[in-house]
Length: 118
Image 1 (tube, rainbow, N blue to C red):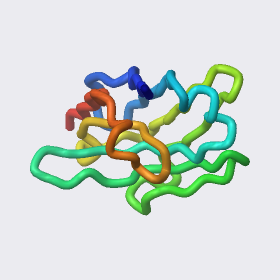
Image 2: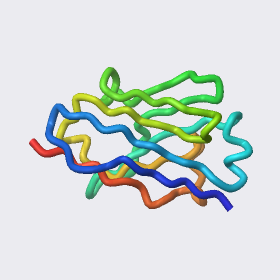
Image 3: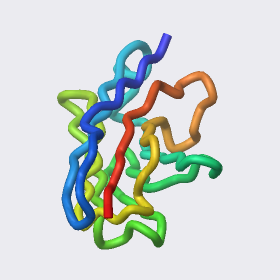
Image 4: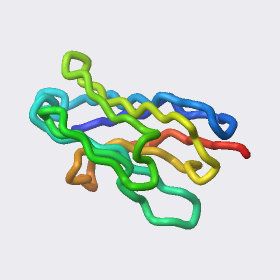
């Protein structure tokens, strides 16, 4: 069984910063070092979207809407993925999830709420 536990969300004013963390467990923990990971988000009334991805070798990609503001990283020793979010905007308000880059249906966790006030 795989568990992905997101944390670090909260309420922040526009222009502020947050750092999200995603801890892995189960079989994914043993495969973490060779697994591409990603952060996704889902805003109210909208479909879930890919925010940022990172390969096992550290190559990254970002949605156009967050380029230059968000940074994804990973710590293999801690089996954890991070998302540093700077210059937050109200339109970044959403529930943020982590998953593999393939977005396996059985890996979705509870997510962490990020709310950006104007």
